[in-house]
Length: 199
Image (tube, rainbow, N blue to C red; front, side, top):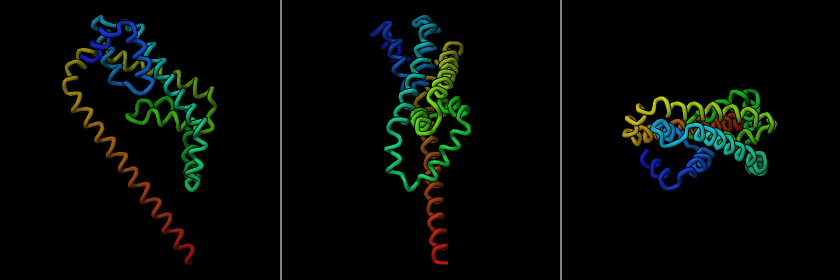
């Protein structure tokens, strides 16, 4: 929180622009603490909220565009996995609304998710509509929680580093597990195809 207060002192009203840029990339902890600072009267919550909302929406629109624009070139290098990629994208398209509304709440996968949606056949108008709603909900939750429950967050902030380290370790562990499952599955498919060729 001290860093946010310093940013406010140094940049004044430019802090809302900083919030826009920060939330375009990630920023859950940043927005929570900014909500706490707003509760204490150092920020205008009615300017903080739209900055967080529009920043979050803008960031995901950019990653969606990057996926739509450059995704096909990337897929050319992954052509051997095309059937699996098509299956994954088909599942994404089937549950598109649920996925768009929920992925920004999943730690560490937000930006890559916007890129993945860009790879799919989901229309940009549909993505933009649901992205606006999802980012509105996201900003409401994190700014609101910081604003209304700021004192509790302030007390927990001293333990922030420990919590963040635990979350990072858990995320890496889950990703490692998925990678292991993926490798084992590929190995099994390769082994089965070899058996079929021999028989």
